[in-house]
Image (cartoon, rainbow, N blue to C red; front, top):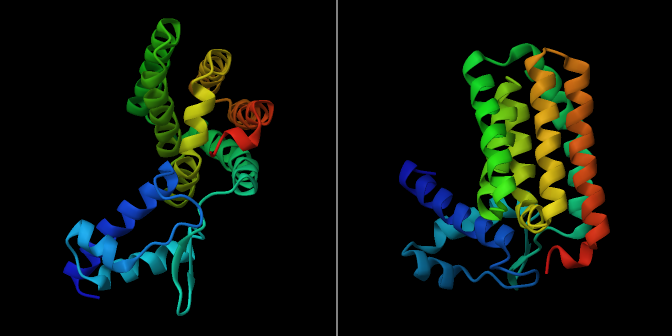
Amino acid sequence: MSHDNYSLSARVYNHIRDGILAGTFAKGDELKEKNIGDELGVSRTPVREALRQLELEGLVSIIPNKGAFVEGVSTDDIRDIYEIRALLEGLCARWAATRISDELMAAMEENIYLTEFHEKKGNAKKLLELDNRFHELLYEAGGSKELMRVLKDYHEYVGRVRKVTLGETKRAKNSTHEHKQICEAIKNHDALLAEKCAREHINNSKKNMEHLGWENLIK
């Protein structure tokens, strides 16, 4: 594939992927190459390449002689993702406790300070932004490009349900406290405690989702 086609395919890929994860494209929707190409001003070739990549990720199914259809992220997928995230974010926090730079540590502490401030103000939109940023900092602090890539993908896959759960006042407050515990363990270079706190944080998020009801999370 030429560089130009690759760039176009990446743009189309991001457009469709974002739409699926945001719920703009619902499960079962047909993704017509011509319609998407016309909307984005590209030929069918980059659209076809993007759909193939999304099929590899399990977000799209391509049925010969019928077309491409949205698979999306199911409740079973979300359960699995949270089980995996608990293990991997624990590992990431453990590595961060011995690898984090002074610059990243300062950024993480600032994030906690701002999160506590906006949590008291009840600013749900800002809390979601800060939550995303906290996990980005944690992934970077882990010092592994491969682990960061996997965790960022999982984090984006559950973006819709995280928005719902963090909109709940009690969970937002608890999440802020859990982030602070992770941050303090990393600052004290306590790798085992950092791992434990990070795992508990993800598991608590999963329990909160179960309390809210899975069927209410990905409508």
